[in-house]
Length: 322
Image 1 (cartoon, rainbow, N blue to C red):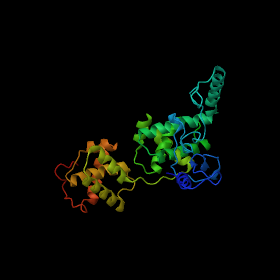
Image 2 (cartoon, rainbow, N blue to C red):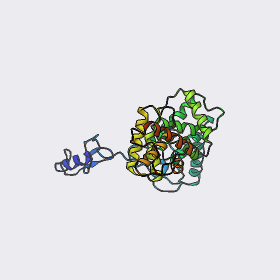
Image 3 (cartoon, helix red, strand yellow):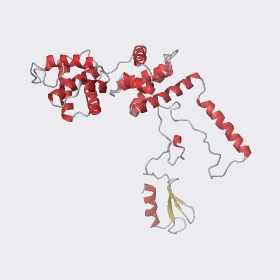
Image 4 (cartoon, rainbow, N blue to C red):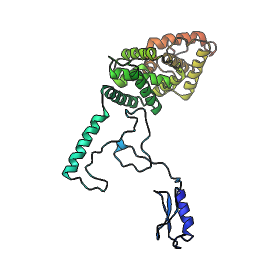
């Protein structure tokens, strides 16, 4: 129960200062306490303690709260514009007559044209739509989508997009946002979500970093360990051991210049052998999106440098494939 309702109950015990009757009631919409008998406003501007409720206009429902949908950079108009609905009825549910229906149709037409006024706005609208679809396919968070939308808007302002494909630039921008937020996704994942070649996305990503002078954080291989292990069903104990191997390789600077996904895959392969939860190199390589050669070569390097610290013998254990 909100504050104005509580005040109404309190005043209901007393007489109205104007007419003397116990007929005071609370008007939540206006934030007032009013006497039902004489209409005297006993109190006004009461603060409502109820929740802020809103319904997105995209859902086609009427707004039930005091405010609209939140502002979002992922929408072309930031979510600030209004839309002329498709219904031909007024607020009371009464159908429009022929003259009014013609007027409403004309307003809808102009509203549709005004949404994409110019090539830049059409470009932005299509790109943001592509980013939303690709982000959904990759199960990206709202923070990633907003970061991608920010990068695309900045690239559009600087004229970086001239002559390039909207879809390829959007994919490159999305990958940059994934890297910037340290979300474990590879170029191949983005390529699969956008139906593009990963080399094209990588080329656009490098050009984006160069033109916009962006600096991305170094990818953390431990996040890739959990992702790979969940795909092939490795135990939690093996995951912890693989993370320990990754940390040891970082301290001894073995990981310098190595691809995070390849390092995570080889560490997981080595941890599986140590913990008796071994998977084949092909299984791990397929789950990580790298080649078996990458896993094998990096595994040899890790075993050679960290074998003593991990308590491994000179010869590979039974079942370990060099």
